[in-house]
Amino acid sequence: MRFIKQFFEKNHPTPKPAPGAVRPEVCEQAARGFEDVYRNHSPEQMPWFWAELDPDFSKALADYGLSHGSAVDLGGGSGTQAIALAKLGFTATCTDFSAGALEGGRKLAQEANVQVDFRYDDVTHTQLKSRFDLVLDRGCFHIIAPARRPDYLQTVLQCLAPQGWFFFKCFSALEPPRPGPFCFTEAEIRDFFEPSLEILELRHTEFPGTRAVFPKAIFAVMKHRP
Image (cartoon, rainbow, N blue to C red; front, side, top):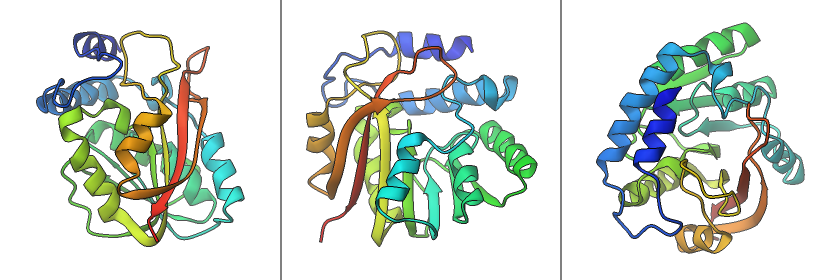
């Protein structure tokens, strides 16, 4: 797991990085590094691993009455969220730029006896053609270089069905400063997403995983504007 620490120490952002402050090729460096991590560690060893559906996602499904349909987890790693949705009856897809992550996910899905479509894909240059009733991001946006964020947003808009839902989770600026993913304020999330999407819910929460203390996070529910 040394790569994760070294990667974020090398590319540790300021609280409000200027556009382009982190070079676009950081995404390509991340792809190579995360591939090594997933090849040499089981999914359960990842700091962000959470075997069940994220509690904020689960609550949002109940709050908004969502119980079926097509779903995609963008940059979903080993696919725990897609697997959890498949258990609930959703037609689930998981994408990631690490083939090793997807291999681990396929094993987890097989063990859970569910069908998940695992796709090798870069969220900043997607090859996905389908639209989904539910789009998830659990910790993908917060590792993307500022210069590539418009490409990420275009992928979300392209994947989201006209009446679809976007569940989003990233690290919060309330998290103590340390090398790691980019952290955001509520205002920064609004500034980035609201020109394109309607934000129905935006609140602070936690990011459950394998760490003893869960990082602070922001959770949002969004849809296409009417």
